[in-house]
Image (cartoon, rainbow, N blue to C red; front, side, top):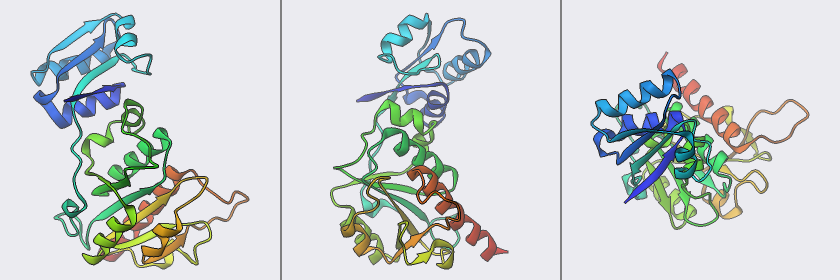
Length: 247
């Protein structure tokens, strides 16, 4: 099985992550130096690479924003919650997990994955239902970061969080009405940051199994944040505390 990836950065990251396992790479003819460099990267990995007019890329991507690059990549590997490490080399104090609860927008889904990978989260967990699908739009929104993520799709998010808690992972749900600010919690051990949908937040059933429900410090007139922005701020606080603890 294979999947379609389009966009300059998503295709580049897919090549870096999968190498010769890529099915093919299609690059826009006369697309400029960046696309020429991408074609050379693919060819250097032994991937079948073709240069074609823009219309062919429009057709292959079904009108998606391909930026002159479309590719066939291996299916993403989905792991079980037991495969999420609690302690891992290079993660003093334990690993960071991100859990998504009801994030339906592919752009938000992909943007959260991008922040999670950039800030050192080792796994992304989300439920089978009431969640954005894994589509080329999601891959593109992640700017290729999804190729480097450990992905865990579960039947029940509360059950998955309870399973992580049994292994010593503290689940922290972000909520604008949380009783404590995130920075007041100790985040130097294994943690799972739980991000809810923008309109509804985290579900009660999810909050009930979390060890903490925390809010972000909001001092301006706006009371809520985009899910991906909230996730990035929360992950930065985790990283900040860990660096401070090491120092």
